[in-house]
Every structure is written in C-alpha cells, then in structure tokens.
Image 1 (cartoon, rainbow, N blue to C red):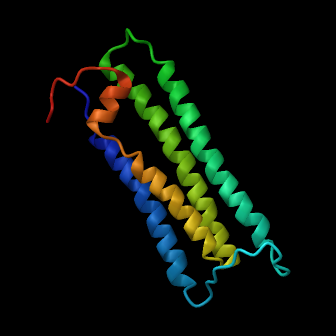
Image 2: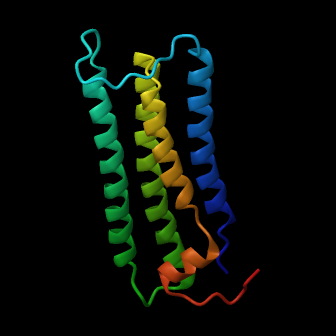
Length: 151
C-alpha cells in the first residue's frame, strides 16, 4: 500500500521553509528594502544578480522537470508498486530541492542587496513548488498504477 502523507509533509516543509526564510529577511530589513530593477544601476551589481536569479530559477525548473522525467522513465514497469513509489519519491525530492535552491538563492540575494525584486523571483519559485504538490491522483497517474484504496 502506498502512503503519500510523508511525501506531502516533506513537500510542505520545503514550501514552508522558503516562506519563513523570506518573511524573516523581509522583517529584519523592512526599513532598508527597495525595489529596483534598473539596468544602469551604478552602485551595485543588482542588474547582473537579477538576471542570474531569474536564469537560475528557470534553469532549476527545467532541470528539475528533466531529471524528474528521466527518473520516472527509468522505472521498471515490472517493479512492485512500492518500488515504483520509492523511485518516484526520489525523483520528486530532486525536483523540489532544485526549486528550493533557486528560491533560497534569490532570498539570499535580497539579504545582500536589500532589493525586494529578489523576493518576487523567489515567490515564483515558491508558487511553482506549491503547484507541483503531490496528490494521490498525480502519483498514481504518473506511475501508471491502479488506486485500490481511494481513501
């Protein structure tokens, strides 16, 4: 029997950690935060870092999806449901970790530059991570197995 509750808990902790880290950074620097996305900013490297943060986020999303699909395609169709689910969990956690890494990178850039723009970029990673939350239907359809216990 496949239990996805631990996977949901791990996914929730990924999302919660990003949210809490961003909230702490914003609260600690609330008087210093700015929102600046000008390409000709003379004092800091904010323009370069903003492109790096966006590129890192896009690459993390695409790489996570690529690796997830690759791991799923390597699952042997003759494996038991439990073995398939264990490989699904590993693939899913890699995908989550990449998105969390991009979000944390953006939040750290906000902490360094005091630019709220990076929190916005991290929010996109958080939204993407939240939208890929595991459900029984997603897991069973991805693994192409029958759900014998709908509860």
